[in-house]
Length: 222
Image (cartoon, rainbow, N blue to C red):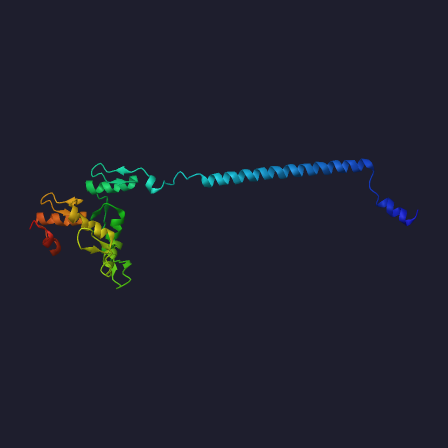
């Protein structure tokens, strides 16, 4: 047998039975692969759908927008709040409850934040600094009102008189002078105040306790 014949015989394809068997195995493998790929694709689509649904589903802990929240009114003064915790804290202004007590001087406060600010009086800490003059304060509210001394512009003008104010809050407090609807009134002399702390200091005048010259000069009762 020639060399060429040997090469042809060696490289010749297997018999027909083997070929059919291999074709069958190859077909089954291809079918299994296609089925697996299809299943994997379906699974991927399902996972994507579930992930999108989870993102679109609102969290049970998330609150609705402020305008859509149910307001909880105070039974004493009618002021409304959108959270029970805020209403609970507000009620302490009526009940006088002060559960947060300073361990140094035993002074009580209605909120923990007020107590934390008060503690700085004992520690001497003044974390809030004015960027204009460098003066420091224990409370951010004190710094806020101090900044007003540096502001010359007063864009918020009263529509009933010629006075103007640097902030909307100052203008709102001023409007009580015109409309007479003071949120806090003295039950002895009927004088009105825009802030509870001002009324509290004013009441000391009727009890004979020493107050600042500012409140002594403002009170018409004296």
